[in-house]
Length: 122
Image (cartoon, rainbow, N blue to C red):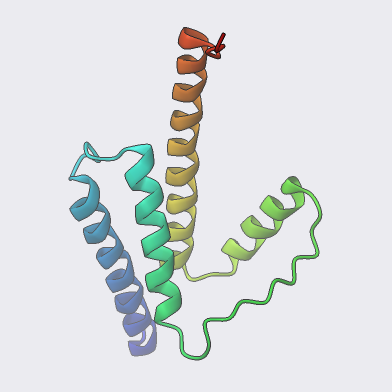
């Protein structure tokens, strides 16, 4: 492996290692402390940290040409393929983690609604 490749790999490893440490610090080694609420908080804070590291203004310009959720997802997955492997892994892991806990939250809300229904006031 050439020196340039080695340093790139080491940089990728550092990003991924830092991400792993942050996840385990927040949620525990087996993710035992993860809840829908603190997963959402972590995701928001993590995204803020990523964008703060980039120079320039913190102004976002949306140029989304996709019009359906399906097209947006396809576009996301295509773009992930072009990212370095550490960034792609982090992007895919955070998406899966966020969606999984969102699903848990929705399921719990549905169960509570089934149990209690809508309370009608007289």
